[in-house]
Image (cartoon, rainbow, N blue to C red; front, side):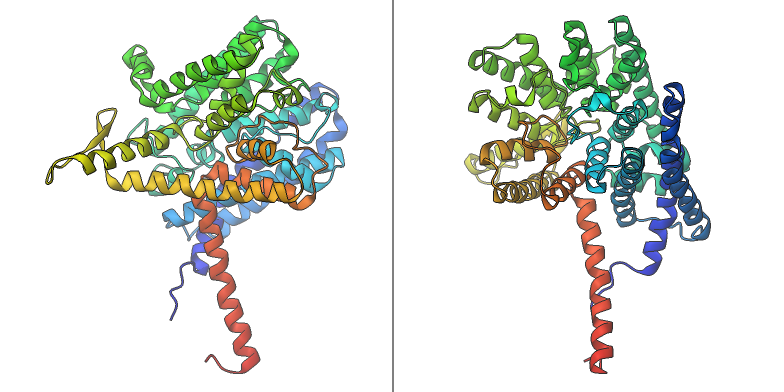
Length: 492
């Protein structure tokens, strides 16, 4: 007899906790209505009200009806996290489809790109979009940067086992405080402080308030989706570039390090191995690309910081980026793949996994050449890492690359140049946003859905999505078995 991994009770637990997130989304996504009213976009209000009401109503129904199903396990957290990101994208897509009258798949791509911080867009001219829609995209990036589940469980769910497992379900392990709920609230507090600082700095640099708010939201979240066609390059202002780069680096640095900055007078950042590697990679890549490409140093540095932090904001148009030397583009691909620190808003493989795997390779070689019987260990920032951690990091990187290669093959099957296709697929799955210009609204629908899927698994770090697939398979098999029993009249 096959073991039943997911039961009806498990699904009801998922719906109960998912309801809280659906309620939160229903309330938060009403915020762009204020922007619509300020800018006289009254016709757009109903486009926000209907999807948000549906989300809040269903969420309330789930939390009330299934209130007895509250014993949450990690597998439930994985399912909740996966469905939360899908639901958020569907609600955002509904708002956009209703207000702009665009194809729902295009709206879904746009919103999945915003929520996951991938930052790519199908809109050729974003500057003609309503201000409320532009703010919606920026708000989605800002919330998605810290994490949909993390923000809402920090506000709506009491501290305890449930909060802890939901925290882990979104690929988070770092604790600022011993208590998970306090950790979440402290992370949100730090996020708000940096956001406020960014808005003030951009205003002082000469940006209008609307631009300052949106650019801060998309920079600190390492989202990169802009309200301007030329992205950050629109401003042609070195001070704006510098502030944006600072916010991108802050966003790609672990929040546990931010919390320690005051206590250690800044030493926590300098001693953090992930931050050290981040800066080293920026310096090395900058030196290499500066030699191989004739361009303004500030633009070159901005592109590199945008790549390693997985922000995807640009000051170089896609068609111009595509003309960079192949070696320079390969460097950018590597930076996009590596990504930011764990416990940050950045995407990609994460710096700590890369460090762990390199340390593991060094340990393997050291053990091979060491005298027989000698026990060798390895450490990261003074903390011993075990074989399980090395295997987990290695397994994740291999799994990530398998999905990436599958996406790349699909792109080439549609006739796209293998090199530029690889660049954009890496950017999509690493939740980056830098592009050579081949991702646009005219893509075939199956390819659009493939890219939406890659953004989804990239943000959730694959495992929660695999749990969803395993759950679906578990639900389909019993259904097929029941169908065969009815057809054959026997369970044999």
